[in-house]
Amino acid sequence: MATTIREQLEARERQNLSPHACLSSRSRGRLKAREAQCDLRTDFQRDRDRIIHSKTFRRLKHKTQVFLAPAGDHYRTRLTHVLEVSQIARTMAVCLWLNEYLTEAIALGHDLGHTPFGHAGEFSLNELHPGGFKHFRQSLRIVDFLENNGRGLNLTWEVRNGIVKHSKGYGDILPEGSSELAATLEGQLVRVADIIAYVNHDLDDALRAEMVHPGDLPAHLRRVLGDRSSQRINAMVSDLVQTTLHRDDGRLHLSAGMNETITELRAFLYDNVYRNYQVHAAFEKAQRIIRDLYAFFLEHEFPANGLASCCRLREPPADGETDRRRHRRVCDFIAGMTDRYALALYTQIFMPKPWSVL
Image (cartoon, rainbow, N blue to C red; front, side):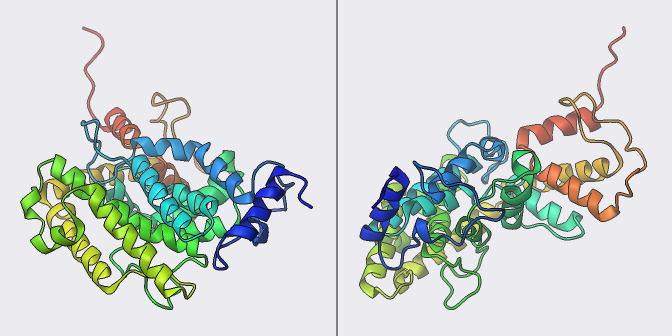
């Protein structure tokens, strides 16, 4: 008999969720030593809360989605993107009788490893760091090692797997029989919700910036998806839910028509927004900032107190610090910066200052 609220929640999951859902009580466990369980929350709820209360999560509010350091109040940031992914993923999870708490935790944590200036920063760090750089791997590194003063968040295996498997780049949305997919349907839902969120809100922001106009979107896409963001999101979510329920084979499915439609909309955004000359020009400037900061901090100490103490030359390593370890520390430091902190630091280090004595 269930004696705690957590046990009651776990019993409710066993009774109500789909046979294809990942149950909290059957988690593969945490990265580190087993912890005492909470009387109130399931393991996946605890993971969600740890992510929300992390410093890395808070910094997402000042990280780029597409438009670098936008002055307008209504453009998406990396934080609002994550929240929109979470909402879309949770809606689909509830409709499919999957684990909403696991879905939410993965969605909120999936982009923790993003750099300042969005994919411009990621591209630069991938070139600069000897081991390469991918934001989804950095997300896992953050929750495993960097957050909580180097102790990590000690998340469950299922959340960690969903975080590191969410990215699809320009690849297929739901590749069949692929090791790219998360082990749980909840993790796979976040992968789909990620693309549903960004193709819609990036289009919305591009329209706001007058980079594209409503009539630029091909007419057949407007007929299928509608003219408003809410209509487009509803069409995509409804298609996945209805097609998956109809197939009922333990996998997620989009109809062939909707898969083609989303792929075409994504191609439209690549051609008209992501590769737009205005976005590309800002992209190149951001890359220069990341390159200069990276080279500087290979030779100088990190700021100890704000921006004031960042120019002292690095002392020769007394502990035998290797070049590889130094690159890793610099990469972690820069990847964690917000747009505005990177810009302020760049100004502090590289821009001339007027003499204070007249």
